[in-house]
Length: 620
Image (cartoon, rainbow, N blue to C red; front, top):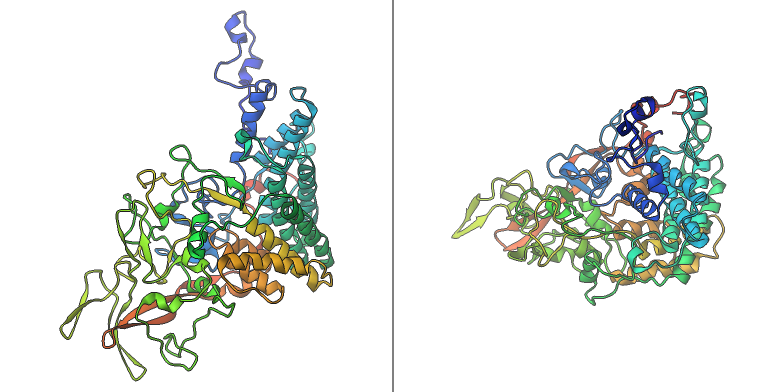
């Protein structure tokens, strides 16, 4: 907890005494505390370092490697839930359960840094009172964000509001026990309320990417939804270090979600992105917008060449990879694809016979002239999120155009009996059927290499399709990360309204349903007739796929151990029917079974962090 980001004077300089004057000169390669907090430029630069440490799980977040990293191999939260399977290591699902457990973020170095700023700003005379209050509000929002990043991982954590001072004669003063999870969320709420009260609605052009009143309110809707969910669905233990002692306390936090969302909905100038009449293209292009966008509340900016990421490098489909290779690391699950409903709101789950072949309502194996026909008439977000077999694709350099040619093998279909003639093998494998030479697998698999899809699907979301402004290779991609979108605020309100209705408070349900259906309308899905908890959860799943919401949502709803304990994910394999020149599909389990146990709802604090404390470890 004693770590400080700025440099201090060398201790030796304070201990040595000499007649030589140069020993009394300040070092030229160090920055003192006065230089940082004694100037406006110093404080602004210091604030920028705090922003860089925000726990934003973006393109450069890795479950095993943390924030602002290269995310080696793309081990991201999507493979720890039902969104994706890694093409090469399908067994790497949750990461270790020991001292190396994934998704760690113990942030007391960052907490100390923001507390230093708050302390120095509180007594600073550099700014007019209004500006000083605004900067303090910004710092409180950042501190709330830091704490939320920890609390959602560990439960209750030590609340430290001011920088600790090392006194060798009073080490006990440094020993801080963990607060309860309830106290921790209340502290986050306190900081965010202060921020919302004192931050401006808008920023000047040179500050447009800093937290404003509405982005603080958006953070509040997310954090308080977590608090409410844990209160309602979590288990109370360790004297409150995890869980809440009364599920009725959830009501307070759901109401806080409503109040924060209303600020944004009623006072903010935000709306859903609707620039393209093609609903699938519209949703796809939302994640390419580089300028102002009516849906974006808080964005993490990327700009080539100074700040970049590698999403396209890791995810471009096999055969369309970027010059440096890689690609295809995450294979979307069929579980994910089936979550996209039909446009009329009915289920998108594919029916199968006992052998796994996709069948119609009468039990007859379905044949298609085009592979994409299987997914016709669905929620338009499907076509912007996943590359389905046979779908069109142009790579980022714009010099290759074609389709996602996914095929598992060649079969004959006679009287509903399927005979597999040949499947799998190399990309060059062929099969002679009469006078026709057929390729056994597609140019994008399935098979041929361990870097092609293992589920039959590829990721499309975020990938830039079009003429890239630079050569797309390692560390060259610069799509922005949309951390808070207006769609999330609408659905957070809807979830809180549905949960409150289940508790007997139905006055928000009408607005909640309207906001839910606004999001569905943008996607081309028929309006839901009623607001239910399940309907909201289903909408969140498809709206935020690969935005690193799903794993945390399943955790806070306490659904992860039900959906992902000893359960394998599903894939979809297309086969070419040689005798009818059509396509049929097989639904099957792929990869290793997920193994999520209830104790994994909280992340284990690393021993090296625990050992920094010398007090009572009872609740660590």
